[in-house]
Each structure stands twice: as structure tokens, then as C-alpha cells.
Image (cartoon, rainbow, N blue to C red):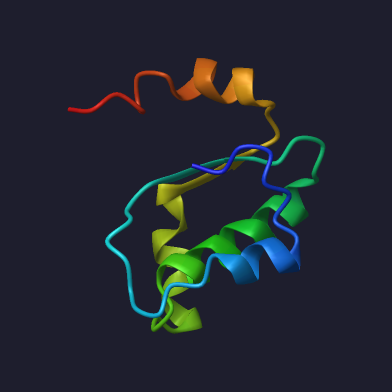
Length: 86
């Protein structure tokens, strides 16, 4: 979960796993950013959590990455049940 992260290049470099992760769902706020910018962020997050994957796979798995034009409260209101452990 990324809340108020900004997705600036320096921030993204700090989160650089050396191998593929087992992360399957990501929730993020991108308050005030355009649809196009949020799509770019989705691709950046995908590459971050799947460092060895090719670009061809990106379109098929981005559904697990939610980057919304929400503030933190709105994100928790929208996805509160989804964030609960099963």
C-alpha cells in the first residue's frame, strides 16, 4: 500500500527489490494525478514488484494494481473490505 508516496524517481529507487516478489495486490493513492499519469505509475509499480518480467506481460496483470485519484480516507472507504484478511 502506497499512501501519499508521490512516486517520484528518488522514492521509487529506494524500493528496489533484488528479486521477484510475491505481491499480488497493490493499493495506492495518486491524488490529483491524471488517468495517464496513474497508468504510468501502475507500470512503475508492476516493474518494481516484478523486476524480471518483460513488458509484454504488463497489460495482463495490471488489474491487481489499484492506483486511484483518492486521498487516504477515500482509499480506505473504497477498499476497506478488500484490505481485510480473508
